[in-house]
Image 1 (cartoon, rainbow, N blue to C red):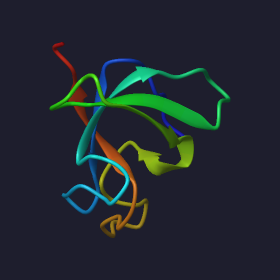
Image 2 (image 1 turned 45 degrees about the vertical axis):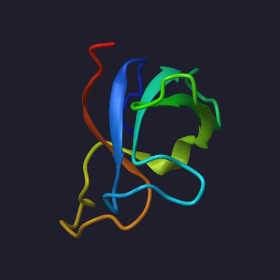
Image 3 (image 1 turned 180 degrees about the vertical axis):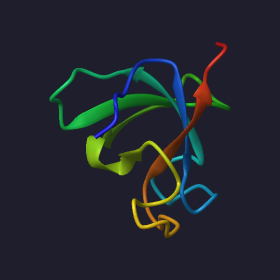
Length: 80
């Protein structure tokens, strides 16, 4: 697992919002070992979510090089 820190920006692997979570989120708070990550919607910072840690990936591709179909992948650091 890669290191999750505050202000990291993640985008959905499918490239669009899900029924429960927005397309792009910014990590607000994460405690190592926790099962969830507190994030906020990049477009609407007042909207916060707790998303399972297992949904977060460092890249949009797996170790085998195939594109991920679920979860979020790291895209940048937030400037907010």
